Amino acid sequence: MSDSEDEITLPSDTLSILNEFLKEKALLEKEEESSDNIGEDWNLSQFWYEESTSEFVANVIENETIGDSKRVLCLSTPSIFKVLYRNNNENIKSHLFEYDKRFSIYGDRFSFYDYNHPLEFPKECENSFDYICFDPPFLSEECLEKVVESINKLRKPTTRLLLLTGRIQNTTKQQQQQQQQQQQQQQQQQQQQQQQQQQQQQQQQR
Image (tube, rainbow, N blue to C red; front, top):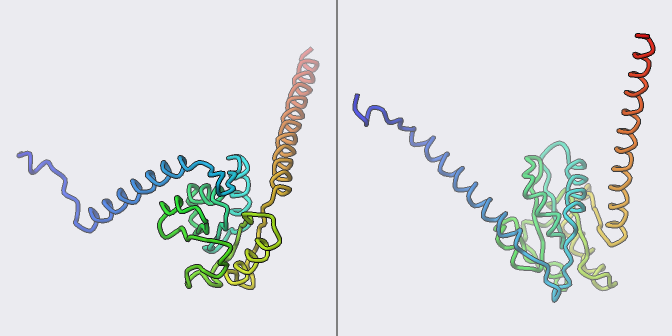
């Protein structure tokens, strides 16, 4: 048998799908590597959330969007978007509105956003999001009003909103700590129960 007969040839359509998959996988890995290197820019008043906080909030969003495919907007919350994008939940199509153009590496999942021009965003985004997670860049009345103006144009009547602020972030950390404490208490209770069962078994054997 010749070498040419030993070679396995894939159908052209299967080979095309495989090449497309490998191309998308390589692009995703490149985007993830690049996005991990995007640091805070204090000139833009950027302060990234801790990874644990970002994962917690992303988990909340995923739990609240169970069901049919949902469009989720991360408005000025790039840390949350990165986790959602990385998780690649099949029920969620996440999109980022952000002033920092370094996040344009996410291609059509990124839209430049400047709260000073609250209605300047792609037309197709109007009334299209099922869930909006937002953190106003500044806690000034003017900024809040303009962000709300944006949201009112982006949301549907049934859209769920999640506002992140310093207070909410602290609350999130407290919830995480409470969960950890509860888990530790449960583990201790289980250990105590096991010890009691062992003691009872030993007494019965005697």
